[in-house]
Amino acid sequence: MMQAFPYRPAIVLLLLVPLGAFCRDVTWETPSAWVRVSPGIGRISGWGASPGRDLLWMKSENPRGPGIAVWEGYRNYGGDKLWLLPEKLRPFAYDSFVPSPETDRRRWAFHSDGPFSGKLVSPSAHIPGVRMVRSLELDPKKPVLTIWNEIRKQSASPFPLHLWSVTQIRLPVYFLLEARGEYFPEVRRYFRYRGKESRAQIVEWESVLRVEMPRENFDYDKIYAFGQFIAAVYPDVVFVQWMDSPEGGAFSDGGNLQVYANPAYAELEIASPLRLLQPGQTMKTVFSEFSLPQP
Image (cartoon, rainbow, N blue to C red; front, side, top):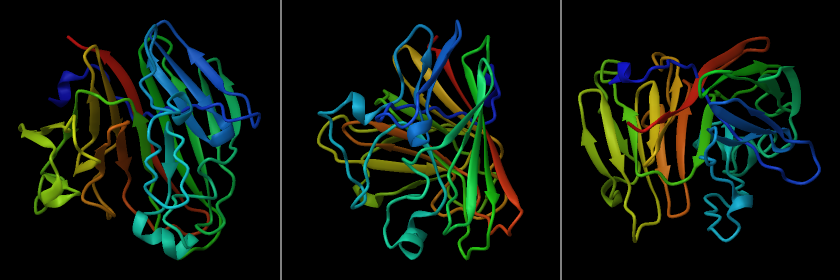
């Protein structure tokens, strides 16, 4: 199944949302794809094939849709973002479950490196003692966005960190998750976050899971697995995210790949292993995102 995809990207994520006059959005467009970056809130807010619709979900474009406030005090903007702390450690760091409040939805610096490449640089996050850098490059010929995510440790902190990419998207027909048992042979192939309350329909293939969420009468569901790629399948296009190998390290939840859905939108999520970095150390992931036409 892995070889069915013609591209092998590293890690790709996109987000863009104009949220006031903080900073101009940056849009790149080629004959095959386009991406919009919003430095004003540190996110990728648009992504799709050219010409084609936007596959990302933004709250500003769906004002009547439910905000789905998962955590008290969290403002759900949508798009693609990067979080640092596992959910259960956030109250110890910030006295709240709100993710990465020092960097998420804050203004990031943007540095252009060329017509289809640039860097998003976060403000310093003082409690975890880091700064994040996301280097982006849109392929000029293929519908592929590659993202190099990096944590740069600046000061000591007791908290282990990971690079958790969360991409909010429009609801697909179904998801695909790679489920590779050889990474952790003693661990089950997938995990239902909601346990017996989960109503997701899961079909197991040799190395891939097909996950279809309910269309009616459900609030949310979430499925975890271990692998390198995750995809949202629409009637006309397949939106794929691919990350470098998840081998090694510890993971805060039941897998490094996660799919989530509620009645308003869905999420593709990929997490790196947790690391306790020392000042001067870095942690990186390479992430590719691409759109393939349905056969």
